[in-house]
Structures are given as structure tokens and as C-alpha cells.
Length: 358
Image (cartoon, rainbow, N blue to C red; front, side, top):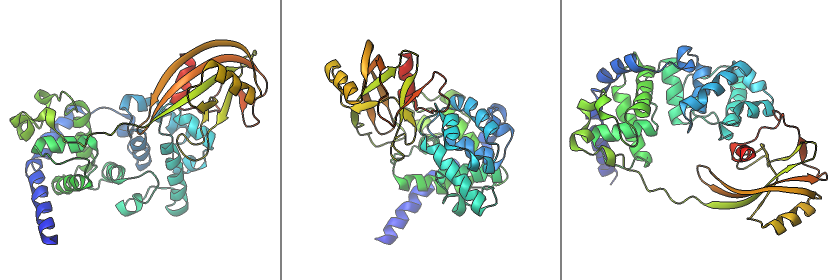
């Protein structure tokens, strides 16, 4: 049985490898012409590459650009990041979402200070042990910053490989990812591994799109088995997404007559850990029940200004929110703060921050 499994694995890898062998010859000249000017590409250091890759996880390039420049100004190197106060760190990250990424960056920076002299390690085995660095990020850092021929395989790369080879294997299967990684490792140009990986990123972001791929502009169109067979729209094959679990919340936007707003800190573990939020409770409360909740918090409503609904979708969860905006009197629970309009010291996730403008 083991021999049969190895034989099948080798067959799949060879199926992927053959069309990819000619890819560097067509992809790199295209990248030289079309590559985007980005701050982490214009000035390349291991630190800048690492921070940019973490910021770019599930986030668009245009959204990252202002955050990257601001982050570099506040924490220009590993030791500076390691010493950054948590509230300052979260404030710099505010609006990017997935705040665990920021905390992982700082935990990794502290490991680097303790174990690697304040520098990023330059081996896959060391990088992969650091918080927040997985296979893709390690490959990106090693190839771009250290010029090592290590593939960086993400969803864009899996989509490109599936279409080039007309491969119907499920790209969410770890075995498929490993086959693609092995095949790319065999064809990567050793003199330009970072450029090759970034060219694949750009091709997936600008040309080989999930929907409506721009095949007429693709430098690899002549190699693409899916284009030849008219299968672009059907590949890659992905498992159907399961429905996201939902959670109902009632959120209170509470202000005092002098303009201060009630905030409280979320728990140190779990979703959006350690960030600030508007007071809320589970369930969708009626106005009568909301008034009772305010009394339980020791508050007296002075004016009910607005009630509205909103929704926020996370990667794995959907919040359905009923929101009450009102002016109140009272101090509230002891763990609350009444913050002024300038709330830079209270980093808040987008799920709550966006409610202020409704």
C-alpha cells in the first residue's frame, strides 16, 4: 500500500511539474516589465519583508500601504518592535484587522532579540518555529530577503498551478499544496527566487484572478492547459465553504452630556483579544430589555437617539448586531472607561469602530 501511495504522489507531482518547467522563462521578463513599485520591494531587508508579508495576509496591498509606512516609522527594526508598548502596537494596527497578527509579530521579535541577536533567522527550520510564520511566509522571507530558492505557496499560486496544469485536485487538500510546492522547488530559478515568487504573487493578483481571469494579458497563456481546454472558470477545485456560525449582539454607543464615550477592554484571549469595544451583550434586545441592561450597569438613559442594525463578517464567524445610540448619566461598571473623542490610546477593531459613523 505504501508503495502505491508513493507512486501516485510522484505521478501527481510530475503532472504538475511538466507545464511549470517553462514558467520562469516567460514569467520573469513579464515581471521585469510589470512589477509594482512597493515600499517593501523598493527597500528590501528581512525585517521589512517579514512585516509586509504578515500585513498582507488576507489584506489588499492598497489597504496595507499606509499602515506599512507608519509601522516602519514607529518600529524600524526588530528590537524596536520587541520593545513597543502593546497599546501602541495595536493602535498602529487598528483598521487592518486580524489583530493576532500584530501580537505574533511582537512575540516573534522578542524571540529574535533573545535568540538571534535581534535579526531574522535565515533558515526554514528556524523561521517556521516563530509565532505567526507558516510555510508561505517562511518561503517569501527566505526567497525575497535571503535569495534562497524556497517556494512561497498561497492561494494565488495554487490557483495558477491548477490552471496551468488543468489539475482537478482539491487545492484545499494539504497533499495538493505539497505537490505544488515540490514542483515549484524543482523549477525555481536559483539566481532570482525572490523575483519568481513575487512574479507569481503579482500574476495571481492582477491577471490569473479567481473570477474572470485576464488570459489575453497572461505571459503564461501559451503554457496554460486550462485555457486550451476552456476550463479557467472551473479551476481550481475547492471544497465548498460551510456556512459561517452566527452570533447575535446588542451594542451600546453610550455618551455622556460632555461628549465622552463608554469603552471596555475585551478579554486577553479569544477573538479580538485585548482590544477596546463598545459595551455589548449577547442577543438582540428590545428597547425595554436594553433599558433594563442599562439599569443593571448603573446607568440612567437621558435620550434615546438612534437604533439600527449592522453586520460584521469575520473569517469564521458572522456577528448580527442591534445597536442603540444614546446619552446616559452614571459611571457604569468599574472596568469601563469614558474616553474623549481623541481615542488613540484605545485601539478598537473595525467591527465596532465602523458603528460610530452609522
